[in-house]
Length: 209
Image (cartoon, rainbow, N blue to C red; front, side, top):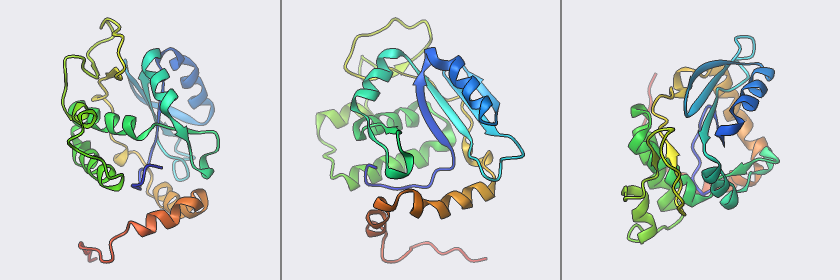
């Protein structure tokens, strides 16, 4: 949606913390089992009977104010995801930078590369003050250190720690991952040509079996 495609093999949804119970019940009704939970997140895996066709589901919990800000700037999802909303480019970069600072150590390289690619694809100015706020942590931090933190009225997001979340790499079934790759052209037809135009003419890395 924001100019840079990368395969990801889980479903990441941001929800209101107050909707935690309803979303848990909904995930279980869809055939998921609870894998890991914490004060700021819920992770679900497909049941063994559906693991080859379904992806892991991760729910990230935020407060009402942050959810409202994310929703206000969100954009419609692609044709293959009717009804879905996608966070804005600005908020996507904020989430990525927050994950680099406070997220799973194994994701740092992926998230850092995502930030660089998004900046390049969208021609963003790294010297812009708004961009500096994403990779520096001012007094009005984006990190919510605990559930007891006082609510802060700010134009910025208040994001919790998600470092207890497990990466999806070891949770996705290979068949589900390959199936998703094959479905991309049908799910996102309007984005295929855009993605192809961004591919380098030659691949600099060769894998030999």
